[in-house]
Image (cartoon, rainbow, N blue to C red; front, side, top):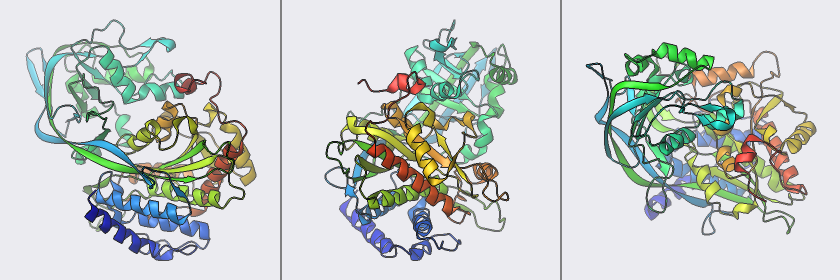
Length: 565
């Protein structure tokens, strides 16, 4: 960032913070697009004011690497400072630089062609396929034989190998997302990740990949929505050599195909797309060699980029434990400015192109700020130190959290637990919270104690098939061996009139990753305060405990990632 740009950002942030005076920050809320009245409860008002500002049009959707994100990062740093927290980033400041590569796909030269049995089938760019961003080559072109490998899962310890009897060396692999339905949720979560799939393909000598969507893949995010935003930038972490981390350069070309175009990929193949979709759900899916060849080509504009995590610290009260840290995380970024979308509830309204991200994740950051305030005021302070990290590039693949987990600004062996806050969909008052991942470690005990003290019911994950335990910023910490928990809003209605589960489904259908995710949504700020208190109390209990949290014996993730003692 240039010095002139930083000065401009600081001036703008100063103007914002001048309006943010506790305990009545209503003036800040007036700068945002929210029409909700300011809550009377001071804690609710503080959270509402932060949400209103972070999700305002002034921050332009907070896309990583943009002016809007930089404004949001400066805002959070100033809020940390106002709370009396220590800077815990680099060089004595609140920021940690995250080196990135930014990639944007180009339409010119994009090709996906099936040549089979004398026929040439050319798929249409955007309507039927999209080339995957290529961080290793600005121009790529590949023609090779192809093989279908089911879901591309190699799990010998579970008696499953989609590659059995198939030779993928030098071939383009065609595969579906997900993992076998017979796997438990933890196993499915791990083996569904793109990282594990691409690693398996690379290790077996594949040179390209085509991911074919199934109808259920597009139930949550329709193909048309992805196609409208085909020019949206993707990102990867950048290593010291200037190359992308975890980009699998052996796979020289990749693409994604819509569910509606799946028949074109499997034309004249031994089985139709519909039969393969059915076999996937039935657990009988088997791979096979595809006749003919596939051709993939594309162009990607790649440039260097940096963004910043915002890091603050509350020192522990016990000198013998202060070097150990409970890490709170919440992602600060969202999608920025994208394809204009009309208001789903007002056909006459102008199209909106700013993806404000109020619930995803301005609300999570705001709750983390309130938890930090509660912990800062606790007397005595927790024995262990508390870290608060507003991470960047979650929407680009959990990159800010990945960088912090790999390169923490405190001693890596001092990270004892992660408490993550991401997209709490608090649109209907509830009496409970849902703890994601608490069954994996000894964090269950402090969670249950905190919930009992606050009179909060703990409910099971209502959507375990979504495997969210590996889809948010706790997962990089898990991969680093750090036990983690991630609390989301409750599912039990507080008034029997507004139902949280229905509200969540409506949000996911109408507002998730859309411009309508704004501060004007009917956020239950009472639930937000309760979630802040619960998270703060968990941190305090973990911070004061004689022993740091541990993975449960035989836990799926603990066995893979726990640090050796």
